[in-house]
Length: 153
Length: 153
Image (tube, rainbow over all chains, first blue to last red; front, side, top):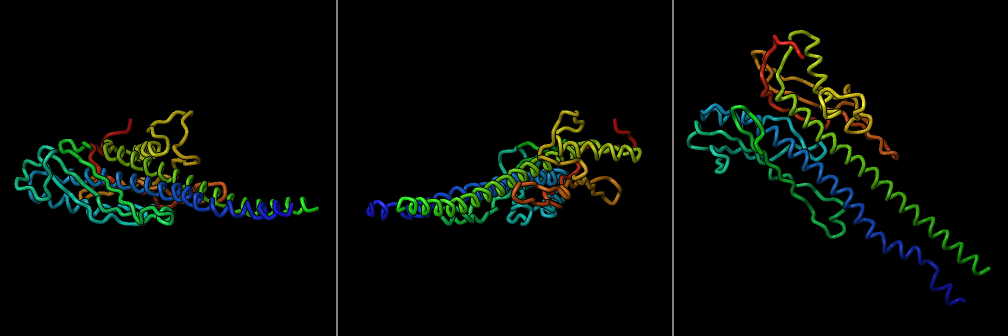
């Protein structure tokens, strides 16, 4: 009987300690994946707005291209639960929607504006504690066409 | 006597571990639900702002301006500019009054952009409430027709 007692005493606590690792992973999934999904959504809404803001400025001149880039930089958008500004945003232009250039030679042929937000590195808090990555990149891009200005992709 | 002591140990261990478990579960639910609501709001604000950006800007009278802004708020809250009585908001408790629609004008008085923001919305995550004021927020360029003399239909 005394042997039985020695073996069962404290079992729940030991099992609980074993489970805490699993529990942390589940909490991490809920918390970090939630933030990743929000960041992805925020980045997508931003690139949608930014590509339209760029497309509005296109008028077939080099000045229009410069204005388009400035309009994207000026857009007051934030991500990571509305706390961080977007960095490393890339604005590109295309005549056919296939070949993209930051500064196209012939501005008069430009019909599409693409905005990419490739550098949204989100710090992973819980998942990194159980062996997950330290940060997660949430890229987004959108394409808008001119005449009339509309989201194309 | 010995058996009762063992049972007492198990009860104490269960109470301790259940406390930790319930706290973790409550926290997971609280953040998970808040993130879910925030994500819904980001999508709703993006959709509403895109609708506003492509809508014809009419403003013959003050009532037309109010009607236009109400349609945008309804789009954010219900996903429909003219919701029916049966429609429910995209997130629990969100009201059109909690959506701010701000127009940005050019020097010549034409609208250049529209800013849609959520104001004073409280997320009730049962164990705790979070108030969102000023986020999520998004600005889209106005690409719709400009017809200030026309009346809203």
